[in-house]
Length: 215
Image (cartoon, rainbow, N blue to C red; front, side, top):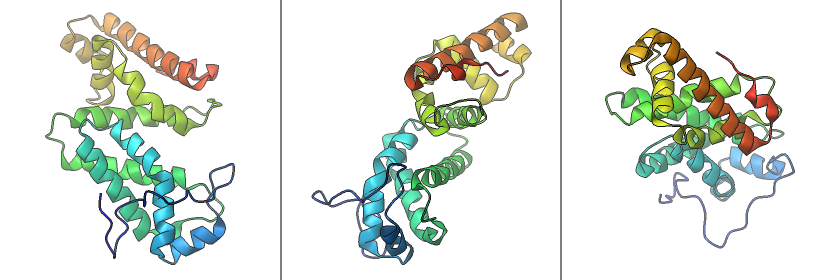
């Protein structure tokens, strides 16, 4: 990614210092004010701070690293475009991740004929499931960040069942037909696949509440 005079496309000079943040990850208010005013140096500090986590979020949900790089750039371009919406007292990461999800969703719609988008679509659907768990004590975003890794660790049949359910939105009877199993066997496979995902998330988050099953 390259930096241009009129748009902050390249994150950071190699010898720059990370921006000041508090324990909750909130940037210094003076820095936020400078970003809102459109000061390039201030925005570069923001990108330095968050580019790694945004790229990591996207890369885990995309099969091609070039796509992750392009979409990371798009996230920060939109952040700059809508910088007046930045709240001084709030952590920027959730807002940036919201932009990243929107960018991913648009990517899926634009490239729906590409086979590899199925992985991205499945990750987005499962992100929604994780975020819908109000009982989880760990930060929901940390759990969502781990989903692609946990999905990748599933057995082939379990991953296929998850993709058919949440990507293709098939009923259990059709999932069973495609996997050459009875509907009851498909139901059991789905249950075990969800449990395996939640056990994986639990091991990474240390939160036993994640194990509660949701059909």
